[in-house]
Image 1 (cartoon, one colour):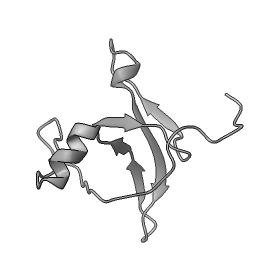
Image 2 (tube, rainbow, N blue to C red; image 1 turned 120 degrees about the vertical axis):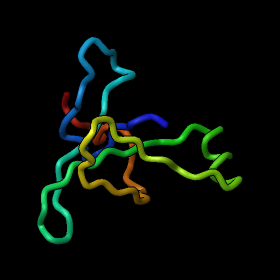
Image 3 (spheres, rainbow, N blue to C red; image 1 turned 180 degrees about the vertical axis):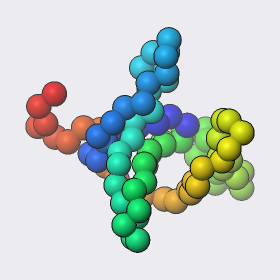
Length: 87
């Protein structure tokens, strides 16, 4: 799976010494209770989509020894930058 830019993207987390393949496109928003959250959108490859359809599960990995609150859900947010947006 690869992190993807969406119309909501407003921050890019970069890996020191990495390249654009390591960028984590994300955005700040609030949950239904008004708490600040950071969201990132991930697009499965065609092979991963086949595996999901065949019953494979999705695993979340968080590096480090302390686990922040996390969650997974589904979204239909449009990928890519906002059309006609100036860079």
